[in-house]
Image 1 (cartoon, one colour):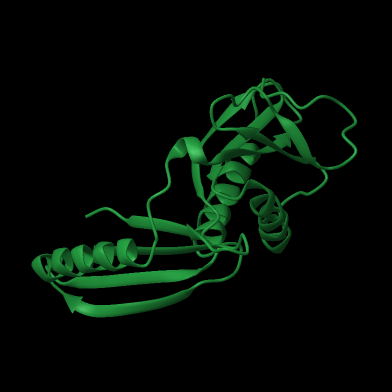
Image 2 (spheres, helix red, strand yellow):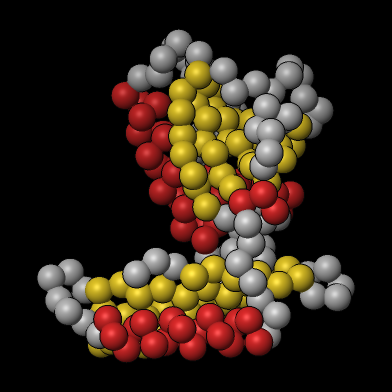
Length: 190
């Protein structure tokens, strides 16, 4: 069963989110149904129903979706989000084993940090000449930039080689550097 993720912007411009999913315990038919909600950019609140079977979870997910719609929450399309590119400068043209470790560690840290704050998902990563790019899709790119800096600092990942840029969903090549400022060189993916 997949995750249902919904958003609503209040009259004052504050974006809120609600999401729910079902996951089974390894090797068992029972699992847990999780509802996570909060203000985008802030640590969310989580409620869990344990020892739930697949059929019950489907009913809970349908009820969750119905309640979200009644409360004005809706799924957000990719086109209504923006890209945040986390980029590390590499010492070699294609990267080293150390860079592969950096990639997996950074992605793992970002996945959890952003998800628990409703700030988006890590979509992919790739290497350009002397660059590691981690692509994040976010409903609030500016807030995601701040959260990414906090996350990577807390994970004690190399901040001296870090750059972050934002781009509209429809054209990831229209990058605008967000960190560090002022930009010393143009931000490019390749």
